[in-house]
Length: 396
Image (cartoon, rainbow, N blue to C red; front, side):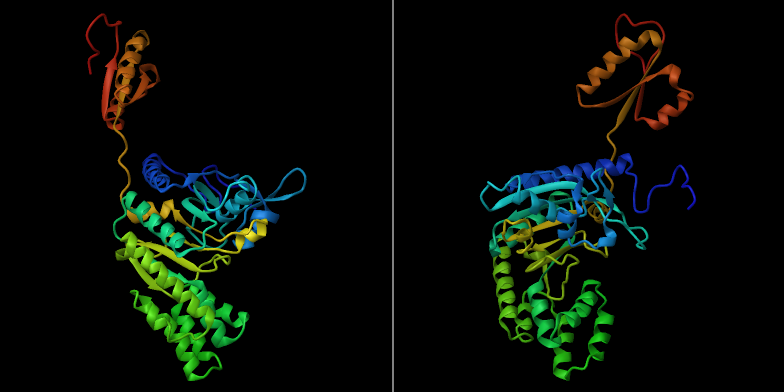
C-alpha cells in the first residue's frame, strides 16, 4: 500500500470551509431552538461506544462500522447512529426518570464507505427521540416537529412520505409465506428499485391474483385516499392494525396543519431493521435522496433492559444545506493594519468595533508581504501606521 499524499484524506472524510461552516451553524442553531421550544432536552453521547452494546444494536451493516480496540482488548465503534446510544442512555443514566422522555441531539456520525463513491463517512445529524409513548399523538408530534424544524432552517419546498413497516410486512408475508422470500422483496423496495421488484414478482410461482396484490403495492403512493386502497390488498389483523394506526396519525397531523407537506407511501422500507411501525422520509425538491428520516421502534429498548415504545427522527445537515441551495454569507470583516508603535491604537480601534459586534482582524504590518492584497481579502482596511496618535481616529 502506497503512502498517501500530504493533502489526501481517508475515504469519505471531508473538510468544512468557512462559508459552509457558517451555513451549517446557522441551520443548526435554528433547528435546535425549535426542538427546545417543543420541550426536547439536548444530550450528548460518547463518540466511542462498545461494539457489543451500541454497535450490535444500531442495525448498521457491520462493514460500515469503524472498529478499533481499547487497551483492554474490547472492540469499540465510532458512533454510527444516535438511536441506539439514546436507548442505552435511557436505560442507564436516565433510568430513574419517568417515561416519556423527550431528548434531542446534534452530533457527528460515522459510517465507513466501501464502494459508495462520493458519500461521506462522517456527517452531522440533528434529531429527536420521544421515548416511552406509543400513541399516534407521539408519532404525529415528531413528524410535525421535523416539518417545523425544516421550515425554521429555511426549507420551503419539501415533502414527507409516510408509510408503515407493519403493513408492508403483513402483505409480503401473507403472499410469499416466509421471511426469506419477503426479505428479497423488501430489498428491492428499500433500494427503490421498482423495475427489479416488478420483474422479481413476475418470476415468482404465484397466482395472477397474488402477483397482482404485490404489484399493486407500488401504486399505494399519494394522498390519504391510498389508505383505503390499501385495505383491499391485505385481509389480516396486522395489516388492518397498521392501516388503522396510519389513519389515526393522519388525523393528528391534520390538527397540526402540516398535511400539505405529506404523502402516503406504503411501499416505504427503511434501512434500519429495528423499525416496527410508522416510518417516514423527508425530501427536498433539489435532492434525489431523503434528507431526513425516522419512525417508530418499539423493541429496541428491550435490548437495554428498559422496555419502552419510542419514535424519533434524524435530519442530515449536509443534505439539508444542499437542499437549501444557498450558502450563508460570510460576516463582513475589517482588517486593522498597524505598525509596531501603533499597536495600542490599533487594539483600541478593534475593541471599539468588536463591541459593536463587528468582525475585526488585527494585522501587524511586518507580517504582510502584499499590502495591496488586503483590500481584496477584507471588506474594509484601516491603517494605524507611523507615529502614535495623540487625537482623532486612525486614517483609512
